[in-house]
Length: 435
Ligand SMILES: [Zn+2]
Image (cartoon, rainbow, N blue to C red; front, top):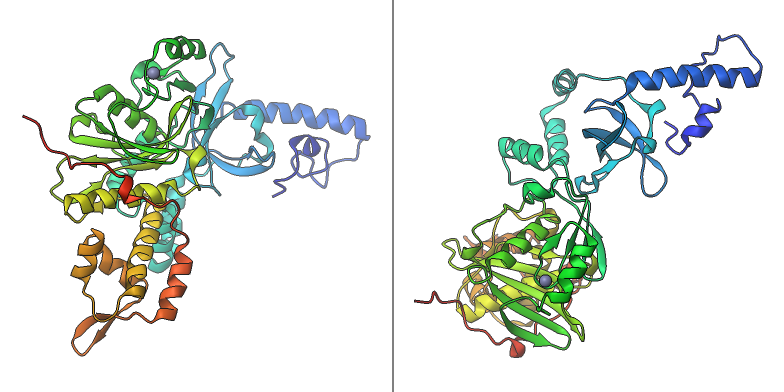
């Protein structure tokens, strides 16, 4: 399919988008164009509005055409009967790039004849071997491994449409990635304006400007528990700062696929990382942590805001969560399911920390000892070392094989650790229920 052709070129008869068949009588070129565009107009009109499930080519931000599937449609305000916007999934790309597009972006000549998907699926699954089927299923639910089919369907149904497309936060305008269940009065908003300090959100820029004149926060509420250079970490108790905690959850959900939104923020502490300058402390990311976890979770959700990604902040947040666990004298593990990106970051962190110790260590060392030194849960240590094939079964027991060359190779592959947490700058006492 000539996805790079613009629709205009096709209309002029250069492509195969018109209705001319090889057997058509040859007319003068000028006449041909008139005939074609009349036919095309009719054909297009009969297609509109496009049905949900339609596959068509769509012009993306790279100005090229890519195959999409229509997930949802909505009427444009004050518009004619066929004026719809379409929410599309780019079949080649991650779901986080799904977006609302205008009709002009769609190449109607490329609309595929409607296929009943249920029938199609049945036929394909009969033809496929089990292995092929599994492979396709795995690809399809990429990053969703730990949800069963039913909850995945439910999740996708609920989150298929992104409501808020962009947000303004501090000096950034940020495109969102996922649906977030803002209160119903925000349903008609495409953009939201956040106060970067108290995280209150508003529908209009003027409202935000008015708010900024009277908002007296210049950093997250709560205690500053870490400061190193221009980086600060604030601990926010969800019970003492309920509205802030809820606002943070709404905001975070725009960038996290599988986060369950906890309205009960009382049970959580939020660790908000900031870059500080003379205008205030600007949030770059955060992680949340249950005050009491039976499962020894030391982190519930973790997010680095898009403008600050790829600077090592995610790694910093993970390392920070383990430093807190060390101070508590407990082992910790992140809450599951982890997102695709989350698991990668954790695997990298565990690999670096464990292999650094193994490299320096002389003599025998057990998983338990590694766990005591790092606050990493024994299961995570075992899984990491097994995935690196560093555990062998010898003479009836599992032993860690620490060939320095192999360790170096894995360490190199795990990448750099990013920003270090300077433990001497952490001033913190573990949470204790008051009263
Ligand atoms: Zn504010």
